[in-house]
Image (cartoon, each protein chain N blue to C red):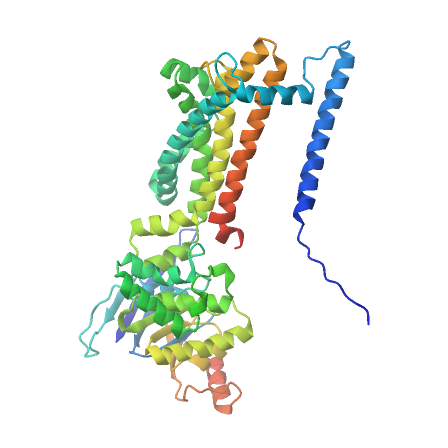
Length: 252
Length: 270
């Protein structure tokens, strides 16, 4: 289990004034959780994710992990240990699909045989075995994001934690819906733990077990929702729309 | 029912060949007209050779040495100098461009020096090179280096600055160290800039070597040959030397087109 406690996170504006972005923000991420973070535009959702991913250490607070979920927490260094999927297409354009997945394994000097097995397993997981030699510009946006997930999974992240920063925002509605279903399937099969930032309430409702609604700046947790309905969610059902409506009311 | 025929938009190869031939024919035509007009205005005498004379000299010089040196040997001498100068520029500009672009402190210290030296034309370094290195290959290499270094450095610097931070973030998240990010992410991502910089650097280096040779730094090289032919009044040989420069330029450009087509396929299609 992960425990995130951000007492304060400040940003320096171009006018050299300090801006408090996050204040007393505290939440846990359970194993095999699917947690979405939503909030008003510019409320610091991406900042939280960058702190979680280990890119930003300039904050007051702590990021801790309990390996056995027994409340014995230790400081957690995220770099190289959790998967990160950014908003933009992030596959290295000079490497083919297979080499993109191998990247993290290569830099960790994982033996070739083990690399081959991992690549094979992940390509099979997303049904893209025959695309292994394609360059990123030769595949669709949705496929790119699937491979980005494979690349993040390849390093075998701690507790299989993957943080995703609006990964489907650049895609059309149809592809986005289909990828959401694919992501849920991967999450189920691989028993992943996902922290998902989005501004799309429909997406948060469809994907999450828990949703954190943040306040305006300085952001803190306004409300934590547990979505109890099963993961065969029907976007047109009354239940689904009630949750959407509740989330929207908090956002407004 | 009306039959619809869909034709390919792709330019057929023979069309490209026709275009090139037409352009070449136009160029030769203008050359003839130019020499003809020159001849009329100079009472029937023209120092500029007709194309057929220049081409005749060109092919003759291929197999017949002039003063014991063939045209190819002159070209070889010039190309070797360009190679040495550009190689030094390449070896120094790549790490320096990356480090200066990444490190703000070094950027603050080194960038002003670079900006100060950059506007000095490479040709202006010729006297400096002669008094420092004498009439030697080092002199040529230095002048070519001064011409090739700055476009290469600027391209690499810009490439690193514009290189997407997302790739670096992803690499960091996958556990890459700083040196791994530099080697495995920044370097491949700036490869197109390196190739562009190299293309400009070789072009400038080629111009510099011709100028340096014409100014008499050495007794061999295509620039020296052209200048020598001008001095002894052998103008068709002089123009043959110029044709040689054009062909070398075309060849270098062709090599870069191929590199871009095959090695930078990913960039061209982005």
